[in-house]
Image 1 (cartoon, rainbow, N blue to C red):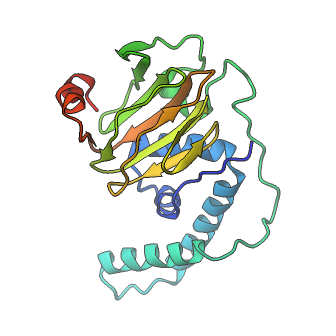
Image 2: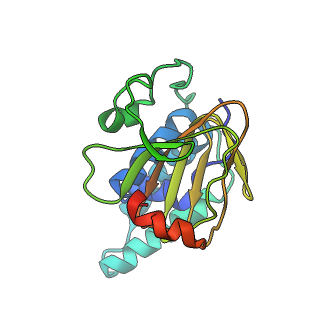
Length: 223
């Protein structure tokens, strides 16, 4: 698998630092299972972070040190990667038709066939994760050829495509791809014909819908 859409560098840095919300970290870990590019970025972020912590100046206030470390790590991640010291481990959780990626097991179980989908809208079903206490972590199954409502984001939305595909103004998203979006993005995903699109999404704030009908239904859907 060779994903074309990756985690944002700031997400990689926050993941390396353990600073992501649990829900977002679960989706990031799901992407990292299949993406050698982002695993290499993570490895580099952890290496740089260790060096920067070792040489940080203790005289600076804690907040200034953290801001400086984050800025330096992002700067280094924008530079070309050196060759990896050892081959990246192969991970192919999508090859087994019934096995969900391992990071999702505590929240959704291990099997696609065992998933208990709930109707959300015509052609759209969802499952909310068990065991989370903040934010929103859910799996969506959207029928082929369906248009989702136009929306933007009150905060972060991180989505990993598991099966099927969709396209929007940002491009074509297929299995293994991550859509790492912030409040500046407005889009309308449209699933491709032929097969349902299954994805896992983490939200740290409600979506924003410009359409009046979607806004009226939003409290019911809790998105």
